[in-house]
Length: 428
Ligand SMILES: Cc1cc2nc3c(=O)[nH]c(=O)nc-3n(C[C@H](O)[C@H](O)[C@H](O)COP(=O)(O)OP(=O)(O)OC[C@H]3O[C@@H](n4cnc5c(N)ncnc54)[C@H](O)[C@@H]3O)c2cc1C
Image 1 (cartoon, rainbow, N blue to C red):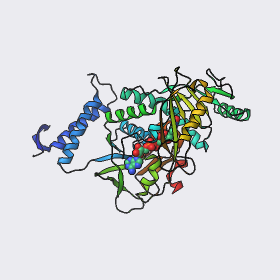
Image 2 (image 1 turned 90 degrees about the vertical axis):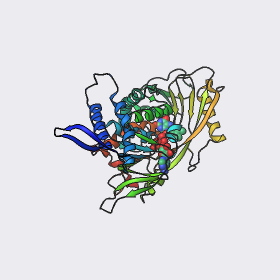
Image 3 (image 1 turned 30 degrees about the horizontal axis):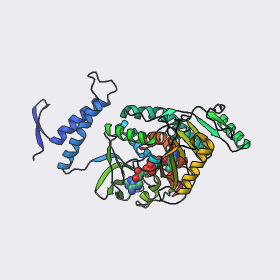
Image 4 (image 1 turned 60 degrees about the horizontal axis):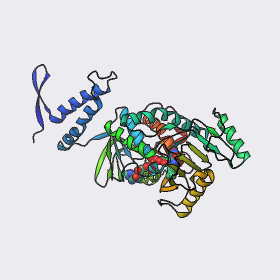
């Protein structure tokens, strides 16, 4: 097929020959400018979806012309960190490809409980605490906007949390910590477990991670992000030698893809993935097991936490019980001992859960790093290879802030928070 078409009316002299691709690209660019225009559309149809209709046509024409699409950004790993960053980048007009070796959102992010606390008593550094707080605030925008973009209720809501302590001394330390961060502590609410001292913090939020992941995928697709599943990264395509290493693209078993920027968000597997480029950024999985209960009487108490154990009540009346910390490498699955510990915790904390039915059990691999801080920023000695991983127990909460900061950094803007304390080079 001859893909050159006659395109009339482009120049005053008369007719001009342009390829079909150029013609469609011109048309699509006009539509894109139309979509990006801040003024609302007076005709009342969705500008983005019309523009997106042209993306597959452009791809087919690209293929016919033998040219290869160059994405603004290729993201490796479709967990919550990769998907939220893809969504953020696409909102800034970037053409994004995100690929995952499985279905997207089926690893740690899928397993999570979805608690979104405003600060972390276990924060290893003050910079981490600032990142935590920043991300909690980002969620107030990201949570509702993703839900609206996808027209899906993700269960993002302020639900409050009852914090319990094993004794008076820990209780006093906890209370001091929360008050020093500007939060008021309130008496425990009913149904409050009376054996333990504790207080209630109203600000805690929660989201249903699996529904939020579905919403993110829908919102990403609607914004033109291409999602490639069952595509495992097997290598990087490096450009010639310079003072900084530069990568032109990546390779999967089924094809090569070009990108101006490459971002690794492969969770616990990031260390292995980045090693394919000869770069050291060690990450280590820590397994967590979870139990889902259906009490005979529906429960809605928000969250109850004691150290690393917690109960999360969902709007449908079910209760999540988490979690264990198992240092067992890349081994998925639950154990009899893990689940029985969670059952005992649930029954001791809220006797109403003693007789609850077990609906499901599952596990996930939290991505951890040696110093407990995430890796956020450019990979060592590279100019266009980026890493965002190592969020350990807080990746759902930290996803919103991470996505904003990584987007700013990759677009060459100044970042809302200094990323130096999280530089991946520190572990190289
Ligand atoms: C039981 C449990 C409860 C949790 N509860 C909470 C909570 O309440 N609140 C909170 O904030 N956090 C919680 N977390 C932590 C949170 O789930 C993680 O920190 C977060 O999900 C990490 O997200 P991620 O996108 O970095 O990784 P992942 O979700 O693991 O995604 C990484 C993706 O990369 C893909 N990938 C790997 N290798 C390759 C490759 N070679 N090529 C292509 N793709 C690849 C994987 O298939 C995967 O989809 C919990 C975790 C667990 C396990």
